[in-house]
Amino acid sequence: MKIAIISDIHSNLEALKATLNDIKSRNVDKIICLGDMIAKGVHPKQCIKLIRDNCDIVLQGNCYFFMLHQL
Image 1 (tube, helix red, strand yellow):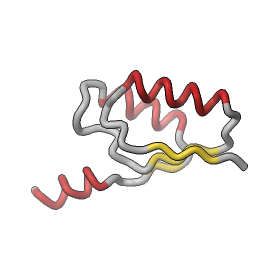
Image 2 (cartoon, rainbow, N blue to C red):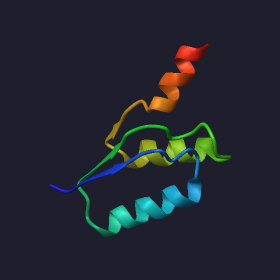
Image 3 (cartoon, rainbow, N blue to C red):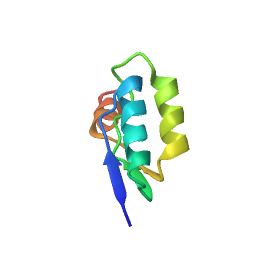
Image 4 (spheres, helix red, strand yellow):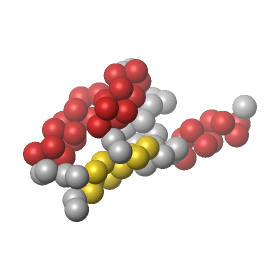
């Protein structure tokens, strides 16, 4: 089984698209996202949708943990 792990996307839509295309070309069986999908870039909604549509497991990143505990 081939597994791809991605993380720290931070709403970089073009990089996410390129990464997912590369993963698909390698016939990966599962994609795991280690979090930090948004919080910095300008395309959070599009990135979240792509991750929901393509990733089998999505974890909470350290960026969100920090934000939630600073409020």
